[in-house]
Every structure is written in C-alpha cells, then in structure tokens.
Image (cartoon, rainbow, N blue to C red; front, side, top):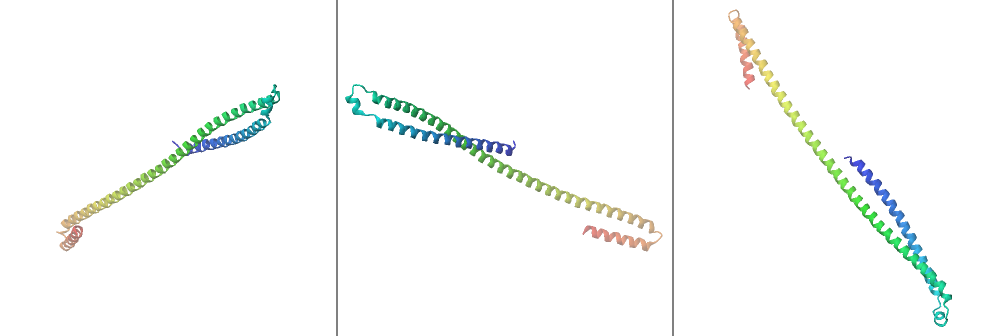
Length: 191
C-alpha cells in the first residue's frame, strides 16, 4: 500500500468535507438570520392585534388578517427550524468524518514513521551483516593466504632438500648452505 496516495486521498477528502462544512455553516447562519426576521414579523403582527376590539366587537375581521399572517410566519418558522435541525445533523456527521480522517491521517503518519524505523533497522542489520561477511571473507582470505604461504614455503623447502640431496655428492658446502637456509625458514615458520 502506498502511504503517499492514501495520504493524498485523505487530504482531498478532508478538503472536500471542510468545504461542505463551510457551506453548511453559511446556510445555517442564513437560516438563523431568516428565523430572526420571521420572529420579528410575528412580533410585529402580534402587536397589531387589538385584543379589546375582539372583546367588544361582534366582528373580528380587523384582527383576522394579522392572525393569518402570524400563522403563516409560524409555519415558516417551523419549516426554518426543521431545516436548521437537518443541517445541524449533517454538520455533526461531517464533523465526525473530519475527526475520523484526522485520526486516520495521524495513524498513517505513525505507521509511516514505524515503517521508516523498520527499514532503517533492516538496513542497519543488513549493513552489519555485510560488515560481518566482509570480516569473515577477509579472515578467510588471510587464512587462505597463510595456507598458500605455508604451501609455498613447504614446496620451497622440499625443492631445497632435493637440491641438497643432488649436490651433496658434488658440492658438500653448497648442500650445507642450503640446509642452513631450510633450517632458518623452518624456524621462522614455526615462530
């Protein structure tokens, strides 16, 4: 899973939700303003109702228009309140989604950091293993060179001994010198 693409998707979704929240907030503010205006209209028409006129007059036609207007405004006010409630429910849903996305992004960041730490640890372990392998190879090379040197020295000693055997009858002094060099080489080799 590519964390960058997931993070990009979450950021886009978050921006989209924030835009919707901003639009909802603007809608709710407009409805609240409209609600205040409707409430003012209701109060205005309530003030126009003459209670004494209704008590003393057989016809209450004067107040009927004001009462009808009040009823209409109250219906409109109820409609506005329902719209505000619906928008607040949607607002809460979007807010929950935003919080969830923030949690996901935090968790993704945490996973990303852990992934980087694990990769660094794995690289560190690989580097240590490479160093150990390198040390082992160099030890093997050193041992291999040491063995090669020993074989060369042995071949050299055998060759000198064969020469001494051949020269002993012809030149005893030269055989003696060759044997002395062989003895010195063997002493150096042992030390």
